[in-house]
Length: 126
Image (cartoon, rainbow, N blue to C red; front, top):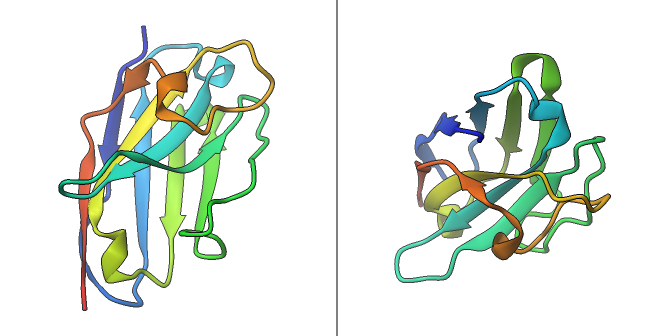
Protein backbone atom coordinates (compact mmCIF):
# COMPACT_ATOMS: atom_id res chain seq x y z
CA UNK A 1 0.00 0.00 0.00
CA UNK A 2 1.31 3.44 -0.93
CA UNK A 3 -0.12 6.76 0.12
CA UNK A 4 0.67 9.81 -1.98
CA UNK A 5 0.43 13.45 -1.00
CA UNK A 6 0.93 16.24 -3.52
CA UNK A 7 1.95 19.78 -2.70
CA UNK A 8 3.14 22.92 -4.41
CA UNK A 9 0.10 23.96 -6.38
CA UNK A 10 -1.09 27.53 -6.53
CA UNK A 11 -1.80 30.55 -8.68
CA UNK A 12 0.93 31.63 -11.08
CA UNK A 13 1.06 34.12 -13.91
CA UNK A 14 1.50 32.94 -17.45
CA UNK A 15 5.18 32.40 -18.19
CA UNK A 16 5.97 31.60 -14.60
CA UNK A 17 7.31 28.46 -12.94
CA UNK A 18 6.11 26.07 -10.30
CA UNK A 19 7.41 22.92 -8.69
CA UNK A 20 5.05 20.23 -7.55
CA UNK A 21 6.10 17.61 -5.05
CA UNK A 22 4.66 14.22 -4.25
CA UNK A 23 5.66 12.42 -1.10
CA UNK A 24 4.99 8.72 -0.72
CA UNK A 25 4.60 6.66 2.39
CA UNK A 26 6.26 3.32 2.86
CA UNK A 27 9.76 1.95 2.61
CA UNK A 28 9.59 0.56 -0.90
CA UNK A 29 9.26 3.78 -2.89
CA UNK A 30 12.18 2.85 -5.12
CA UNK A 31 10.22 -0.16 -6.41
CA UNK A 32 7.46 1.99 -7.90
CA UNK A 33 7.05 3.69 -11.20
CA UNK A 34 5.78 7.21 -10.57
CA UNK A 35 3.63 9.41 -12.75
CA UNK A 36 2.06 12.84 -12.91
CA UNK A 37 -1.33 13.41 -14.48
CA UNK A 38 -3.59 16.41 -14.72
CA UNK A 39 -7.26 17.04 -15.13
CA UNK A 40 -8.82 20.30 -16.22
CA UNK A 41 -12.50 21.00 -15.56
CA UNK A 42 -14.77 18.91 -17.79
CA UNK A 43 -11.81 17.18 -19.41
CA UNK A 44 -10.29 13.72 -19.22
CA UNK A 45 -7.38 13.08 -16.90
CA UNK A 46 -4.26 13.18 -19.04
CA UNK A 47 -0.75 11.95 -18.60
CA UNK A 48 1.91 14.61 -18.02
CA UNK A 49 5.15 12.77 -17.29
CA UNK A 50 6.38 9.65 -15.55
CA UNK A 51 9.61 8.17 -14.30
CA UNK A 52 10.41 4.51 -13.94
CA UNK A 53 11.74 2.91 -10.79
CA UNK A 54 15.19 3.04 -12.38
CA UNK A 55 14.89 6.66 -13.43
CA UNK A 56 13.98 6.21 -17.10
CA UNK A 57 11.68 8.85 -18.54
CA UNK A 58 9.69 8.28 -21.73
CA UNK A 59 9.23 10.89 -24.43
CA UNK A 60 7.21 13.84 -23.19
CA UNK A 61 3.83 14.64 -24.66
CA UNK A 62 3.87 17.69 -26.93
CA UNK A 63 1.75 19.65 -24.48
CA UNK A 64 4.58 19.84 -21.94
CA UNK A 65 7.66 19.09 -24.00
CA UNK A 66 10.56 21.39 -23.20
CA UNK A 67 8.70 22.96 -20.29
CA UNK A 68 8.11 20.24 -17.69
CA UNK A 69 10.62 17.87 -16.13
CA UNK A 70 10.25 15.07 -13.64
CA UNK A 71 12.75 13.75 -11.16
CA UNK A 72 12.66 11.48 -8.19
CA UNK A 73 14.51 11.38 -4.91
CA UNK A 74 14.31 7.87 -3.55
CA UNK A 75 16.02 8.88 -0.32
CA UNK A 76 13.13 11.25 0.39
CA UNK A 77 10.39 9.07 -1.10
CA UNK A 78 9.50 11.93 -3.39
CA UNK A 79 8.89 12.69 -7.02
CA UNK A 80 8.84 16.25 -8.27
CA UNK A 81 7.43 17.97 -11.29
CA UNK A 82 9.22 21.12 -12.36
CA UNK A 83 7.08 23.29 -14.58
CA UNK A 84 8.35 26.30 -16.52
CA UNK A 85 6.88 28.71 -19.07
CA UNK A 86 3.45 27.94 -17.76
CA UNK A 87 0.43 28.66 -19.91
CA UNK A 88 -3.24 29.18 -19.04
CA UNK A 89 -3.99 25.80 -20.63
CA UNK A 90 -1.82 24.18 -17.96
CA UNK A 91 -4.50 25.05 -15.44
CA UNK A 92 -5.67 21.80 -13.87
CA UNK A 93 -5.59 19.63 -10.82
CA UNK A 94 -2.34 17.70 -10.87
CA UNK A 95 -2.24 14.17 -9.53
CA UNK A 96 0.63 11.97 -8.51
CA UNK A 97 0.33 8.25 -9.19
CA UNK A 98 2.30 5.11 -8.45
CA UNK A 99 2.42 1.55 -9.66
CA UNK A 100 4.44 -1.49 -8.78
CA UNK A 101 3.93 -2.90 -12.29
CA UNK A 102 6.65 -5.30 -13.34
CA UNK A 103 7.26 -3.61 -16.70
CA UNK A 104 10.58 -1.85 -17.22
CA UNK A 105 9.02 1.48 -18.18
CA UNK A 106 6.46 3.58 -16.36
CA UNK A 107 2.97 3.55 -17.86
CA UNK A 108 1.80 6.58 -19.80
CA UNK A 109 -1.87 5.71 -19.38
CA UNK A 110 -3.79 6.34 -16.18
CA UNK A 111 -5.09 2.78 -16.15
CA UNK A 112 -1.54 1.64 -15.48
CA UNK A 113 -1.54 3.14 -12.00
CA UNK A 114 -3.23 1.82 -8.90
CA UNK A 115 -2.25 4.42 -6.32
CA UNK A 116 -3.27 8.06 -6.55
CA UNK A 117 -2.92 11.20 -4.52
CA UNK A 118 -5.77 13.63 -3.96
CA UNK A 119 -4.29 16.22 -6.27
CA UNK A 120 -3.06 19.78 -6.08
CA UNK A 121 -4.62 22.64 -8.00
CA UNK A 122 -2.53 24.69 -10.40
CA UNK A 123 -4.03 27.85 -11.83
CA UNK A 124 -2.28 29.89 -14.48
CA UNK A 125 -3.53 33.41 -15.05
CA UNK A 126 -3.17 35.08 -18.43
